[in-house]
Structure formats: C-alpha cells, structure tokens
Image (cartoon, rainbow, N blue to C red):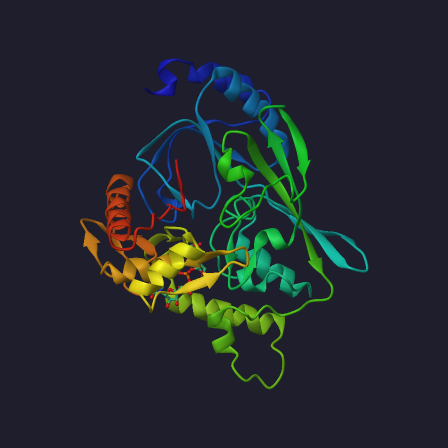
Length: 356
Ligand code: EPU
C-alpha cells in the first residue's frame, strides 16, 4: 500500500513546510546506497539539523506511517519501493569539545562522512580512529552496526551518543553501556524504530598505543625499524582495504555481507577434526569466531554470478551488484550461500547489512 493512499501528502507538506521542513515525493535513491540498487522513497526529508527531527517525527508517528533513516547507504539492502518517510541524514559538523589529561573529546554530526572524520581527526593530531580508515558510510551509522576493522571497534572510542528517542519523543544522551554494543551489533540495530542518532561524541585517549595485532597489519609492519605513526597505520589500512575490498563507487557492495559466526569450544573441536585448515579466532570467553569468508570460499562461491549479482572474486564475504541487480536477486544468492555453508559446516551465517 502506498502511504499516500491513506494520508494527504498536501496536509503533511503544509504542516511541516510552515516549520521550514521540506518533504519530497518519489526520491530516487540509487546514488544513496552503495549497492547501487534502484529504489524510490515514497516520501523523504533531508535532515540538516537536529531541530528538524522532533516536528518531523511527531507528524510521521502520529500518522502511523513506516519510516527509516538512511545515512551513507553503505550497509543497507534497499527494496525497489520504500513506503512512508525516509530521513536522509545530513547533519554536519565536527569539533573538539574538551580536553583533559586522559583524552580529547570530539563531537560529530551524524551525517559526517566516516572516512573524512578519521582523516580530520588525524590532521588535528588526534590518533585513535586510524584502524577504521576507509570504511564507507556516515558517523551516525557507525555505532548502529558497531563498525570494526583491524582489531578496533568504534565502540572502543565512543563517549556518548545523542539520539532522538521516538518513544519519549525527546533527545537523550546515551552512555556506551546504554548502547549495548557487541560484535556488529547495538541497541540501535536491534530496535531500529526507537532511536534516531543525531550526533556522536568520541573520547580519543592521549596515551595512544598502535593496534597492530590483526594479522594483515602485523604482516604489513613485520620487523618495523620504528613503531609506525598513526598516519602510517591509516595509510596501511587504506592500502590493505583497497587490495581486498571493492570500491563501492566502482562495484556496488556493502562490505561484509555476513557476520563471522561464533561457535562453542566443543563445536570447534568437531569442526577442526573434519576441517583442520579452518580459520578460527578465540574470543576469550570460551567461544570462537570462524572466518565466514573462508567458509563461503570453501563452498566454491568466490567469483560466482547469479544474474546481475555475484560474489566478489577476491573476498567471498562480499556480495556485489554487477549492474542491474535487485534486493530480491541478492537475497536469493545470500540464501543459497547460507544453505551451502549450513550443509557443509553445520554453521548458520547471519546477514550483516540492514534489510529495509
Ligand atoms: N578468507 C578466505 N577466503 C575469502 C575471504 C577470506 O580464505 O574469500 C580468509 C582470509 O584469508 C583470512 C580470513 O578468511 O584468513 C579472514 O578474512 P579477512 O582478514 O579478510 O577478514 P574478514 O573476517 O573477512 C573482517 C570484517 C571486515 C573487516 C576485516 C578486517 C566481519 C564480518 N568483517 O573481515 O569488515 O574489514 O575483518 O578487520 O567481521 C565489513 O564489516 O563490511 C568489513 C569489511
């Protein structure tokens, strides 16, 4: 059902435009999702300041229409039609807000491009985010999936999050504990209809220590003469990522399409018995992560094509749009991969991006 079937676009437009909020109809989102899928938002609103959110959401919630937030669109699978309201998050601005002996605190608008923020923080002489270089998307989206790469998760550096709570219809300041961060997970991912993140505050510690324990970085910096600087690590991460992962501007993708699954000690022992070369990472809590890319690769999917979608030839964890792909085709390929991995290894792969 089209939302506008049951509600007058004109009355919503009139109510909000008197408050300086512009509602658009039938916005094409192909340029706003890194898979490059054609998708039309029935209604949309570009959010450039936090003040727009309460009146907009008051109207959206009281009309009972479906809604969602789109940031950089780099971790979403969009259907062809998005009913109701799509908030296009573009709140900008980043600033150092305070300094104490232990850390520098910065506050960043939800719409700021993540990689540009990482580069800006290093240019200010503030290390800490360098392992997370070149991750596509926006700063407001980073805590939702708790982005992580090369041994660092964004939750390690978050001080607080400002979000509009749609239940209370008020802004709240959330501590990291309240965000319930876990591997590629948070309260924002589990309760997508509750919070709209408007700003993120980071605490960048002054006693910076390079994080080089991840195998790719350890190998890159094998036998260094001096400890690498934050910018050297930033450059290394960019080089490694560019080698392994497709540039979404060239080949549509959302990075890892599945989470690395976790298994118990007993399951691991059984798996290693049959598959002694399986790649595993101990979690320190008795469980072990498996490399989903390796599992998919072993099932022969690297470089596979199904119609206009496929599996990236250099990294089996990345599904790609070959041109005119759709969410339906991509999710069918994902199901085929899940079934093959389940059949061969008895492990369920969980889809990582958000299906809207
Ligand atoms: N592997 C294969 N075949 C493949 C892919 C991987 O054998 O086709 C093996 C690799 O050789 C390696 C292991 O599997 O030994 C793990 O691969 P990799 O180091 O590339 O890391 P990953 O587990 O595939 C994770 C994150 C990435 C992140 C990298 C680096 C998840 C789901 N993915 O990938 O995150 O950049 O580590 O830290 O946790 C993302 O979330 O979009 C993303 C790219």
